Image (cartoon, rainbow, N blue to C red; front, side, top):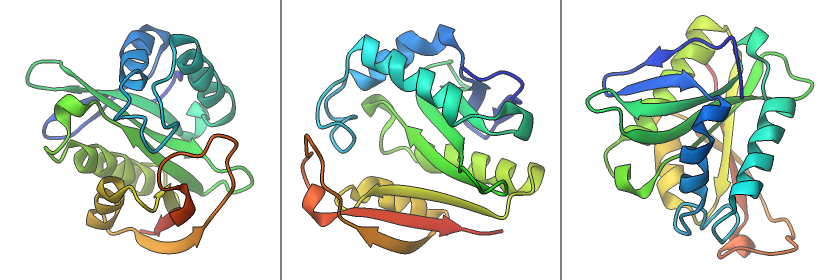
Length: 180
């Protein structure tokens, strides 16, 4: 999906730039209803996943600025561990949107935090960004804990209407920000 991004490493993760060869992993991830619970409220198809990643590649990535998406593998055994991203924030060159999604098999091990920490270090230490932001549904306490562990500060909550609302939509979305 993105080219020109560096491979990144943490203690337990190897993060490689996402490519089309990773689509089977990403499709399997999105096929899990629990993974997609607070995103679509249902599993997504392979075609929907391909569309998602086409959109990420076209509109949310800028490898020339070091922004894009990485697929993670456990360094110990190369098990697929999810994806992490620093997405483009239109109109704000020094800002990126942090995102991530992990398979249930690796939940509860601190890998979301570890991968995000690696991307935050890349954002501030390598790219010189001035702010990284992330958002989550208010009811998604797992994702909110990850952001809070990393030092992100809750800055905004809003409720929006959805054509196909997912569980907890009425509690809103929460934005978090982090500066160096």
